[in-house]
Image (cartoon, rainbow, N blue to C red; front, side, top):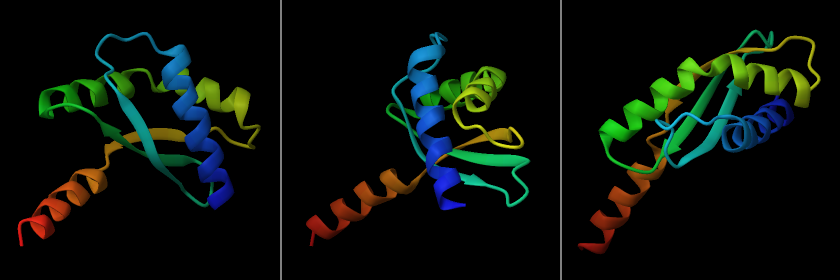
Length: 106
């Protein structure tokens, strides 16, 4: 499953850069993908540079263009099924920055 998740992360990341031209999509990094064991669904975790409005706008644009991204997966990741994508904001990098600031303030 880790290999599948990594391939999916790479394919989705490159498809966002090369195939999506939605102006609502800001600077996005696909941080992780968790594919279900039956390969029917996948949770895509993204990190977005910007404030909360830009984050919500980017997530909405990604959700509306999931068909294009699923087609890219079908082309690039030769799998038995093309999973249905759901996009989620990854708070990990943001939490790491906050923890770093807390530790530096000591």
